[in-house]
Image (cartoon, rainbow, N blue to C red):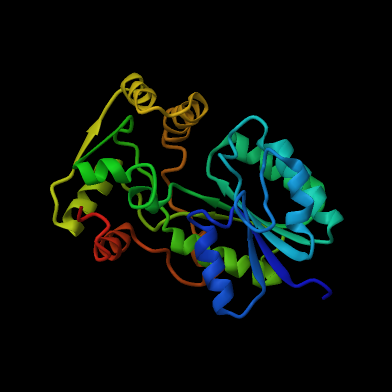
Length: 274
């Protein structure tokens, strides 16, 4: 193969960094492509795409801000075409479960004709420790517009393992995997498990969507991000994704990581001790 390098579009995110570490440990040639990388990649600056992709054989793609935004599908199709012009033959796309925009993006990737693997992931466990919910977890109370609907939270470590398998094993090409944890929990149950693992009192409070979005606006979040979160909580978190799926077992040959294991492992790092 003339080119053997793997490029990670979004390589500085929750999944990209983990994938990078695993590929490097295997001794494989890999590089990140993001706004701050040596060969930058910016979804909103298409002039950066070719330079970031040239010289690679395959790519992992995590779209920002989210595949549900209106322009995502067209961008995914366009980047796939640029990738083929740069002689890449495979894209692993991180997608979302139950999102209509994500499904349009998947269709655009398939229509491009490039070899592909689609990883549809549920909500990340790491949202509680590395993302949007951490500040409130540390403050002792998480407030969200989510009630008794259950979500099979997925460990980002599992996503990274699945992506590495897809990038290195041709048997996973042109397949779609739905990645979930082995057990579905409500957000209240998830917070209770974090409290137990960390030994700290942490409460969960369900709030209305109006209260939630007003709080985000007061915190200074941009309107576009607020609209995105409103869509995720108001539409996707309606029970359509509550079922667990076998994607991790199918691609890795082992069970997915349970939320309780994630909570104990993460509590041991001290991240929730502040």
